[in-house]
Image (cartoon, rainbow, N blue to C red; front, side, top):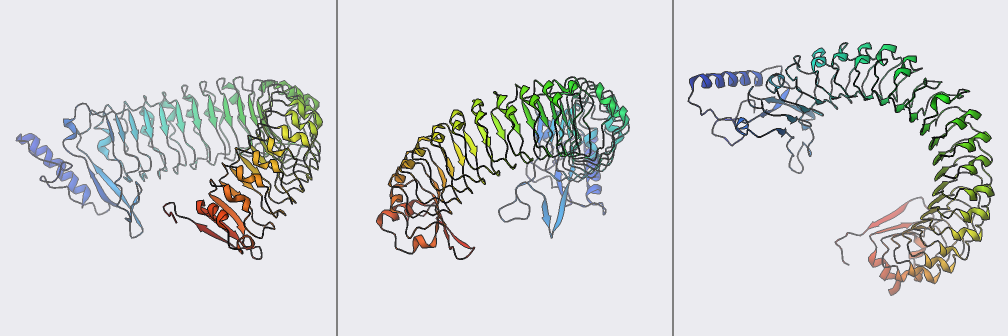
Length: 589
């Protein structure tokens, strides 16, 4: 209720037991203040956090976390969430004695939906170093913040703040400020006075500019301003950030970066993803990770010497048609993403990027895989999906360290026998191509763990297919398979298999040896009954079948399989609908 709890209530209530007239009068004065605050007709608060009097009697207490009550099951509040009444959010109001928490150094109010921080917070906690007030439904802060002179960490994220008070800059001990996920439209002009700031998180606000005084934060190491409305950055706003090592400007509206950014001699990570810039940033001597995806870059500069220290470069989602030969100077580059551009080829000098480990060329216009790629002998991950490739070069056998190859959504008609040399391959995606067969040497990929051959034109599999003994995931759906090799039962690690949408009438007898198989899809084939070969698949938990396979009453052997199922999907091939049956974990029948 709007009145404080009586003195005789539980330990969380306030007790006036002192015999000192002066203290007694002071307590009643504060009580009167509390009554006035709670009875304020303009107040929107409906819940009062009454901090108990016995807190000052815990002299060793340094950390205090106040959490919202968890409502009972079926209540309106939810677990740790805002309380609702008639669809209206009930914010809460906190009342505390000025001396109640003077010894606290860490205070967490996150999730309490206070609506406003009490004014006493800024004057009654001289030793407070850590204050977390995220998700408190705050729309403003107390005007006098200078009383929190010892504060080093302030979390105001996920509130409704439109402004930060100018006095915030007086917190000269503040190291970390998180004001992300608010509605901030501008920063205090004097924010540069908070000279100890090392981390400043301002993402997901409505900022259109950054104050020039920001450049005075000489200790700032991490600055995040992603998902705002920035169009231009004033040169002075970044020129003095000599200790800045990470800058996130992604998802703004920037057309260019200021030339003064070249003064950021410590900057190691720069993220400019999803802006409108059409050029590379100025040279930065310490930069090792540059993210420029989803911009308007049509060409790279003729000289990339200023970026030769880069280890990771993301240029996906631009409009690149060609790469300059000077890209070969990026000799330390280990990760490069060129996804979703307009590339039709690569320069021969590309093969000099000897440190390359991860390369993404997906969603381009490549008709042939450039041979220069086969010189990248340290390559482990290669993605060439969504191009127009008709074949893979025989020289791919040189990529002996390759563990992941994605060549899906191309026009491959066959695989070269030399693919067997990729002995370290663990994940292979060849779906949505035009493959009719696999070479016998394919079965030498003994470390293959994940294989997708779906949506091809495969009519058969190699007889030695079971030699892929490490395979756990196998997708063969939407092919033209009528038979499966007997060696299929040797896939002892297989856990997930999709054989749907083929022309199968039965399964090889050895399928019962797949003891680890848990998920099997057989729908849209030519089965007239549940294959009897499934009788020994006692580990099977999920099965997809068509109606035709259940028209005959399953025999005792097949029933043994069904008895272990948790999920059974039954498809009617004449309609797009399917039936889904779930077996309860506690059902023993």
